[in-house]
Length: 179
Image (cartoon, rainbow, N blue to C red; front, side):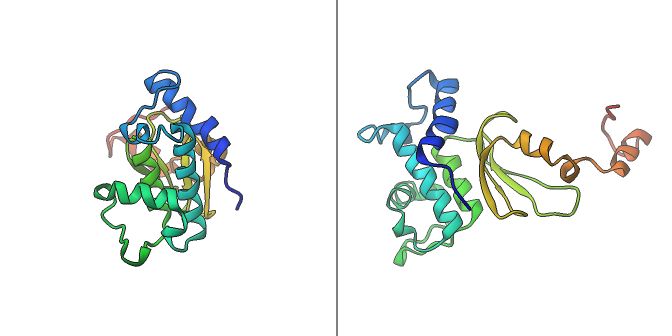
């Protein structure tokens, strides 16, 4: 699986987020401002890229120096990160948690398909169409996209089953049927 470059991560994820939430060119997070000596955009993009590589390839977190330093510096946010021997199991959820913490997201959330396939987890950055980091457990891949597009492109996987609409229509469960 090919991962997005640091430049792509910076241009599609980090720069628009900062421009929207904090004003053009201004780091939105104190954690990001710590890295001004490298340039916060490049530093954040490096960590996101390393987190994606770690989540995809596994191995020893110490092989990803920017990611390891970030997790170590913010160990209170990652209580499961065991650094004795530099071992931590690379999981998509851990990767998404690091990205969420780094970008001051609103948590890692999950879309549960209605067709019985595996879920999609993503970093909630505030809006359905904000570019974010997403992991599709069914496909075993990370994506740099928005979760609204994923749902639209694979609608049959996420659509509400007809029986739920029937229950709502009959008043057996609360909700509104949109015709």
